[in-house]
Length: 306
Image (cartoon, rainbow, N blue to C red; front, side, top):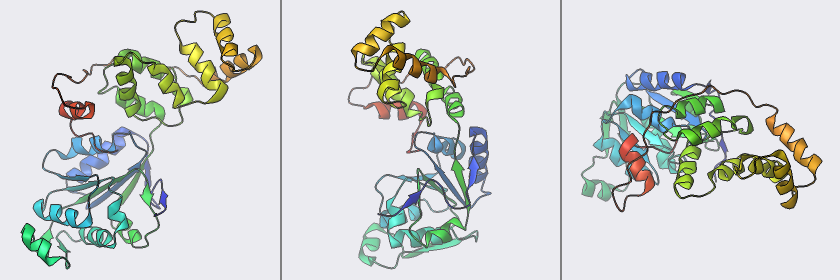
């Protein structure tokens, strides 16, 4: 398996959605021939690029082969191409050759497929064609083992998207809908090293099912006695510290002093987060047979993998 890194070598670190949107708009306007965006999952990298590009874009994601991508390049000739978290393209020699051809700095590039001629003929696809398509590559981590991938990096602008948890929280406010969950996460941002927008949606799903969404969020941040302290503090059935300490000890977390030591550490670093009023609406759940992500895509567009 190819080794990976969070970012391409020499990538420009971007920390705000405003900056990311500016680069996405520059790509959409045709100023960038190749844009590489790396960043942790659940940061809306895909959605940000989609918002800038519009519908006339070839979006390739999932389990795509190099041959399948070649066919899409031909069918969407001259349109912007986005390859979203398709790991196989970096692992196939044919995929690397495709990327190198498509990333040439000339305005018009020649893309060729010189094997499997019969499959090309059956699909009505030529062995080579010329295209003006710019290319964007989105990835959660960047492959580093393939030496030829350096030649791809050198042909474009590479960004490493690394927003703070407060920045992600603020951007989530532009589309999320559940004020209770949003405000509760705001009060626990100081516990989170990383934050995914999917956390809010999953918490809402658990809430809709009548399940303990607060514990789920906390388990994404904490373990051991610290998690138990946070859970009893978040549980509305315990109204006083004495009740919380009693439950903490009964659950095997430790003694009274252990409770207060962890409680102090959890509150240390807590900062006031600006109050934001949400205006988003939950997805309509009226169509039978449609899964939850499909409903979200119907309302907010393709969520992508970033």
